[in-house]
Image (spheres, protein in one colour):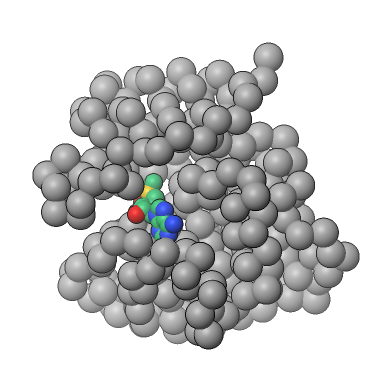
Length: 237
Ligand SMILES: C[S@@+](CC[C@H](N)C(=O)[O-])C[C@H]1O[C@@H](n2cnc3c(N)ncnc32)[C@H](O)[C@@H]1O
């Protein structure tokens, strides 16, 4: 039986960046991403769909402290050299250590502190590739469709890794105490699965246009992956 999609506020989004519970939850998030194998899945999708087009600019939506994209960069920088990455988040979270780690890969980092919709309303919102990890599930219709519409205007490739909305992932989200996650992370994990995706829900929310090839699938134990590539932009054959 499928779970109906239900989007509710997450605690991390309501806490100030310097709140100790938020700081702890962002550290938990790194462990959750590891358990979900999110960076590996994102890297595989970027290489499969983006390697041939040699992207020069990448925009990560809801990038948090940037350490997720850093893990991805470490996996793909050999094939995608010299990328300029914009890390967009409502909160100012990217520290010097993370910037230096990107620089060591010869990737340039530009943190952008903005709400995603304000950013897309501005002039500098283009990038070769847009990515999102554990971000799209924050939005319900019609906002989700509007957001994907902005992404389709901005880029030639979009890759997203989101929570899969099914009973197995829901059971997993109730187990985060076992890997030492705090109350914020445990709450938000369950909320995130209820707000997650399955089937062709992201394809259906993507703007209808023949220029785009869409790939949407369950991946790994807990992940729902989506890639949209503009025809002629290079990628998996
Ligand atoms: C679940 S966290 C994921 C962070 C990061 N992608 C990762 O995997 O570690 C979602 C992030 O989206 C950001 N966020 C939520 N709503 C946003 C919005 N409307 N505009 C920009 N960022 C937003 C939050 O501040 C948070 O850092």
